[in-house]
Image (cartoon, rainbow, N blue to C red; front, top):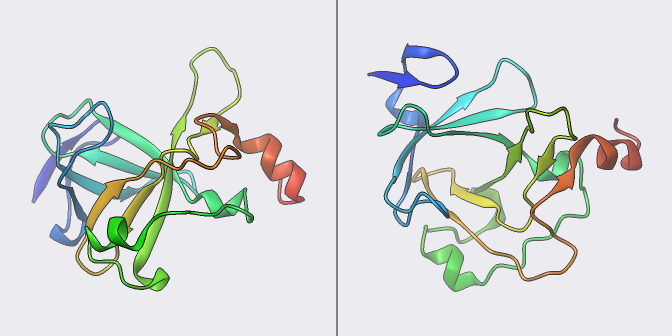
Amino acid sequence: MKVATKAYGLIDVDERQKIVFSQGLFGFETLHDYLLLDSERQPFYWLQSMGVEQVAFVLVNPFLFRPDYELNISNEELAEIGITSPEKALVFSIVTIPPDGSPMTANLQGPLIINRDTRTGKQAVLSDARWKTKHDIMAELAATGNG
C-alpha cells in the first residue's frame, strides 16, 4: 500500500509495518493507525500516522542508552495489548530533536509498548521518578561508555 509520510514522501509500505494504538498516543488520541519505519539514521525509527501525513515521531530503543531502564507496568496493562512475556514486547521512546540545536532528548516516562505478534501498541506512563520526559540521549550514551 502507498502512504504519504513526513520524512520520505509517498512510499510503498508492507501491511506488516502497521501498528494500531487503540487509545492513540498522548495528545493524539484520535489517531490510531501508524507505520513503524526504519530511519535512514540508525538506531532511530519513524512512527508515521497513516491518517495525517504531518504527524510522525522519531523513536529510539531506550535500552541502547539506558541499560538500567525499567518498565514497571502491570500485567493487566500489558494484557490490554496481548503481551504475556517480555519477549513479545518492543519498547520505544519518543525522541525530541529541538530546532535550536539543544540536545536531542528521549521521553522515558511515556514509553511505547508494541506487541511484536499482533502489532498493537499502547503508550504507558511510568511513575518511577528516575524516568523523565527529557533524557539527553548523547549525554547518557557517553555516561554508559557507548557514546
